[in-house]
Length: 301
Image (cartoon, rainbow, N blue to C red; front, side):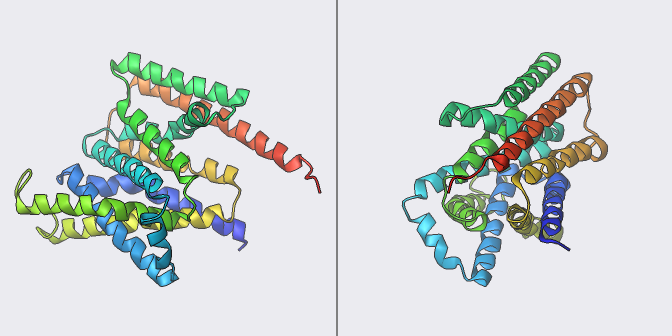
């Protein structure tokens, strides 16, 4: 099996885990989202520290946590934490379809963030894709009587997170380990308050029964495992392939929401989602053409 095929398989597996993760978080829908988020943060830290220790790369962590990039890492940590919370909340509150929409439009939101904040130029195809996405959001807003705030929140936080990650000079495992390290004290404080009864109901879910305890502990592997597969894939396949396969994630999220969670798919969803799919097709074709042109440009020697 070639390295490229291994990379594609790793990418498909990562996106499959991400796409089906809603089932996992639905299983702890009776646990408040902040508590689930706190466990996800702490168990992710345990997972990443173990991986870095096995790889002999723990020495790389202090440079990010206490180095010059700490502010950048802290903002990235805030963005990914907000994104995780939004996804968990949407699953527990019957908004999984809207969450899937957020991850569909994320690439287009990231393009616009790059244009507005970093002055990146857009091709005509990219502008057309963004316009179609905006039309889809407008249709949903008008039809449902409210803007799809969950989708916009998830797409924006993940888009900002992705752009920040481009400026962090570290691999994905080390950088995410640094992010959850910064978040860990807040997560630990929250769980202390929950278990001691200082905020909310008295007693936390962890330790109350073994199914909840196991599910919450496994959230670290659920977070870190796909990320490592994603990192493995990006080193072996073209970024255009990574981008196209990544749409498997929201597609599975949508299928889980509609078929397993039985969330209602309205007429407005049936209009908006094809618009998003068309926008993604236009965007992907534009990205493929740009990459092909870059490969054809001769390099000066």
